[in-house]
Image 1: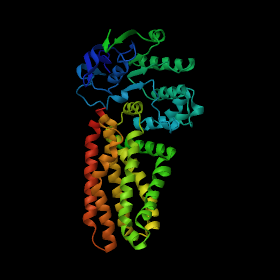
Image 2: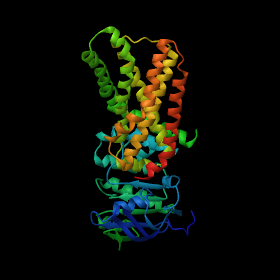
Image 3: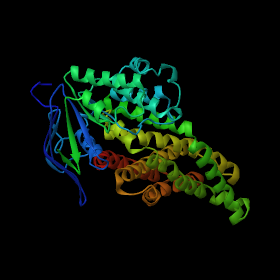
Image 4: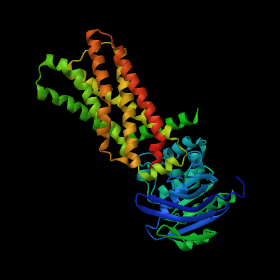
Length: 214
Length: 222
């Protein structure tokens, strides 16, 4: 990654679904080593913006580059393993154990299986590795999702409500994960309603109001 | 191992592990299929000669209709956040399609075998040409599994609801049903079944190509 290339470069990005405009004229530049706090009321478009940043939704207008790749024209599969997303709704498979959930991610990403147990131990879930995800608390599931992010090195970390349902130790883990990403020259976007906590982690904060970034 | 092959096997293993824990196919769909086979003699009478004659056809109809249910599970068992998280692992859409089709086809083979044993017991179906029969069972499972995976992907893309899957799958599975019933009939009468086997192979290949080509656009249209 060239230091001069922004991790995120959005110029006049908009997203329209049918007749509904969800994002309009979003300008956002995130440089390597930067963490951005993203705030906004419910329905302001925060999660949608996070999905666009994660290449999961394609913008309908504007220039949108993530890690130097134009999202409007290019296939995004190669880019995706460089982007980590932990949403506020757990994305684990409830029937599978925590170890199986992480092992699936490790196999898909071609990461050594030994990283699975290391990551679970790092988030304090070594003793719960054989427990089905569906039988774990919301907080444990979130820890497991952060463990998945610890197995690999992402260049862009997208966290939706990073402090939700987490105890003090887990919050330290999240902050450590963000710091590690930034130290490596990556970037992070943190969506939250907890302005004080996120403001401490972020280099700058922006507000989304009805799809418009302020 | 190539990336797509490794990812496809991971997806298949994940789907089969989830199914093993839930047991929907083994404990719900298979018994339902056997019950359907049990109900037919109550409706048309228990004359053994009649049952012997219509048994193979009824078996394939049950496989088709209940096989769709096996395929439907793929349309409803993954939430939006799960799909997003999987996509950000760098899963290639072709690997997702191949893995899901492999898992569904494997489940369908189990379904066909268990319900097949029940059909043989209930309708006294002759087991002639076991090798050919195994090939027919496999082709139906792959074809139906592939078709159900495509239909599930259409539903997951937001272009319809899970209730749409049977409507998409059943009519398009008719060539498979025709090939299977005619193959069994040919084996009983000692005539060549090569043309029916070829028909099923062509159907499976066409479905495979459609699945591979459409996997990217269907995943990205969400």
